[in-house]
Length: 224
Image (cartoon, rainbow, N blue to C red; front, side):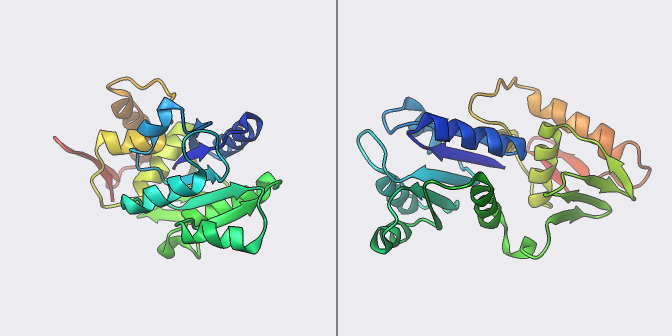
């Protein structure tokens, strides 16, 4: 899952990035609205945006939120702010935000809100994602097949989670790169192929029954 953090306080932004990356999320950071990376970042279909309300530059967080909604972007948006008056929180929610967190905050609360926003209706009652005899626990990071635990690297885990969350759907290499790797990651043309190969070697090849990961030639990959 890929998250964008728009926060002008670099200490807060980097702490959020570090904490979320330890939870196996890919995280991009933008510090102000003058950052050239912001324009590119807003073109990417992030899974969630954490947005500071008070930003230096040509616009503020609420305007960014409104613009995203006007352009049809549906990803969850969590607003961070030092403003704690009810009418100010209402303004944020009316601008299209899904949740509102008052500074200062504990990272544990931020993480809980992030996980809640990322849950889909069919996953709300269960932290374990499944496809056939393969399961992935988003809390303990444990992957199992036929009661055998499979050890994955952080990137392999993120890739498998994205595939399972979209089971049955064909995902292009661009889809996968946008959701599994962050903006600063060094990605080569065959990076996705290499990591798909790593996953197959761990979750499919050791087992004699049907392979879960499929290559759809000319299109991409899917899991089912």
